[in-house]
Image (cartoon, rainbow, N blue to C red; front, side):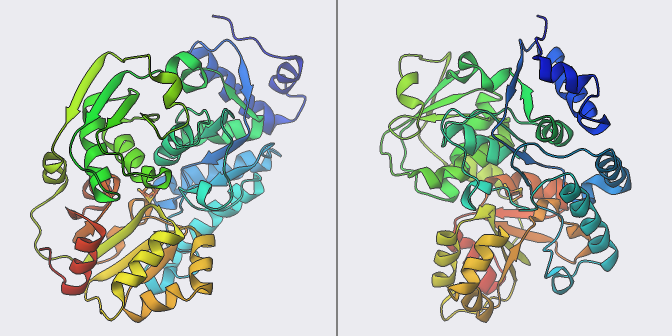
Length: 402
Ligand code: F3S
């Protein structure tokens, strides 16, 4: 299929908007040709991943600085994924000055490119909420899943450079989840066991993602007790275990009603979450770090943690990761003080998976996030315990998993 370009797009590709925009358009067009897109589609917003200096290194930093020096600028609202550290509290958390300087240089390069340094994987919790049907170019897998499934916007999972190129070009190639046909279910999943919010959704998502791989599950819950915000842990888990970027939940998500008559080719029945919990749990008995807030915690989640910790003291390190704006709101409402009084920390701008955790002395992690449980062993060298928020907080108090 030949990729059609508008006159403006052809001009950008020819370099009339400068070398930075030309390079962006070359990337977008190359991807369009690889994936057989008919044309490009303007995007309403972009979410850029590849922010941690731990992953980018000096080569990535120079790549960003060079692109900025070519005069490239985002044409649409664009936000950043978590960085490798809390930008204000990195020293107290134990990260080195050298890492902090390099990380700030990366963020400065993104800012020079016109990207807002929100440093969160939940931009939709801090005011960047796409509308139903809008085309986007988002990169972080759980955010992509949320935008597609819960909000009904349309985005493929972009890579770091392709999301940045889309921000600068203001468009992306129209293929994959931008097209109606790719949004149809490929599997019907009947969930017959009780599922409550939090870790249960992670265990469920882990099991389904592994079996549906790259597909579009259509969930039918025998007893639907979710609300849309609970879905962020479901989507994050499926993204981690099976690269699932879109799902539908009968009676809940915005495109589900239109999908009812498309049965999908696969049929799964989930009547027990225990295999999911078992697969995500290692043997560690001692816990030295507890991480909650993956995807980044909402204010309601921070509040629930503060309430649970009332009158308790943690002995293990406890990090609750969230967006800077949520942390600020938690500080203003006294939640940060309550969590700090119990010995925990509300950490902004980062997440454990992209932080240089090897610089610290942690060996074992407890988390209520299936996504974190999937990635922490390989990305952070940590042995993992996975369970409910209450189990994790109890482990933070006792230093042991029970
Ligand atoms: Fe967000 Fe990091 Fe989890 S990017 S989804 S907190 S692994």
